[in-house]
Length: 118
Image (tube, rainbow, N blue to C red):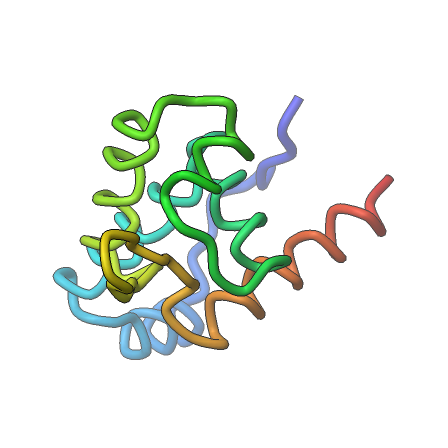
């Protein structure tokens, strides 16, 4: 059962402080979309593989996830649209990597946090 206050009492100073520091609603929606991208097991496996390998082509990611290149491509499109991964073309191959060090740090921090909770 979730614990809740036994008596309803707002602490207006803290409410106003929290409200004043919240990002704009549009930014909150972007953050929600970002975390939604991380909430899919296939996409998360792709990201963790990229975190470890640095860069993988779509064929490599297909082998890692045991999914078709088409299915991996669909997941990569979502990750790219949400600015989680970026890519480069090399001849007929397309290599993906995490967009930047912030993404790597979010993944690392999450893995460490969940390891400590166990």
